[in-house]
Image (tube, rainbow, N blue to C red; front, side, top):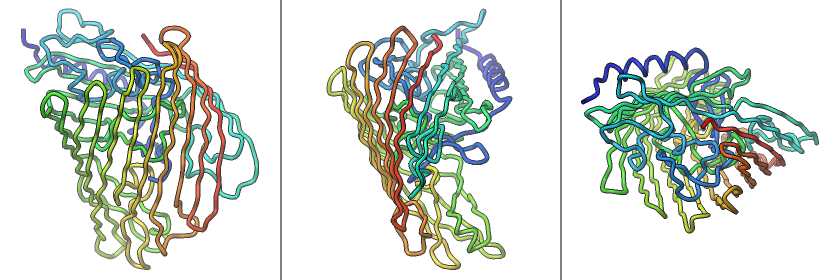
Length: 444
């Protein structure tokens, strides 16, 4: 019999209430960092570390190599509105779920516990994740060791049948804050073609996030999660189109407010659209974004600047053991989407948009059923302007290589080497080497 939506709404509200006691919205990331801002609202990649050697679909079937160890996207059901994974059938039952008695509602508690040991051979700036633009330039020698468990993650997935197919509520959080408090990562409803709530921006492809152990993503990859209304529709069997309006925010270089006292403004939501193609061996993703970034000087009119950006991701599965990822992103609206600045100082009285360019190449290889590796390299550039201060970030690079072992079901152990560089407008240069070991237990 058809499911009455009141039950699902009640369950989703109960889920949100249980999860929202602490923690804040997060997002992720241009040339640079992407983890958390001072107010705790900006999150990083929270990557897809610790690969499982095989890719698990919602049905639990092996489907070749995928970054599933930290179940960041499809294997955990975190990727919203995946028409190739979530079936729109009469029953809402999904792998590992439990049924609420006398109802058609299915639910599942998930997540994992993850412990990290991180050692820096030189000052790296940020100790709990690898953020190249925080690497000191011309710094003295020094080493640091850190152990942490704040990447540990908890989620609740609730689904029920409806006239629009399977209706879904998903809430997830982790403890990746300065004081290990719980924060919201995802909190959204997915009903038919509509997604409402906080999840990955439509400007990024979660399937393409390289599988690093490091919580931070390669410097060019977009890993923002934010509030949005998104409409998604399939175009044929393997192609889908999405359009989204998303929570806006404008960031500026420090010199802007120091030279022109005032405040950033967000007059309109960010407008994003994308196409995603996916078959057994090839995937591609193409996104475009339009933004209105604005700054209002004290006692003066707002200075509105038009912002645009495009993001292209290609994924190739040449064999059952390999996955190759390539990405290019560019535009003058990328600032806060990778924790950079949207606006810079143009003259003593005006601002202008900041241009960025970045790229990433990654390879995941499965050596055996229990052993896999990922190699990733990423670069990000900020266009140099004559009014930029000498210490303005100009270039950053991020390299990672790891080896991940799954000795028993749901448990992965990995080691990763990371190398990053950072260069500023005045030519100052810094680099850092890091080793990270991680152990993760995924809730069955």
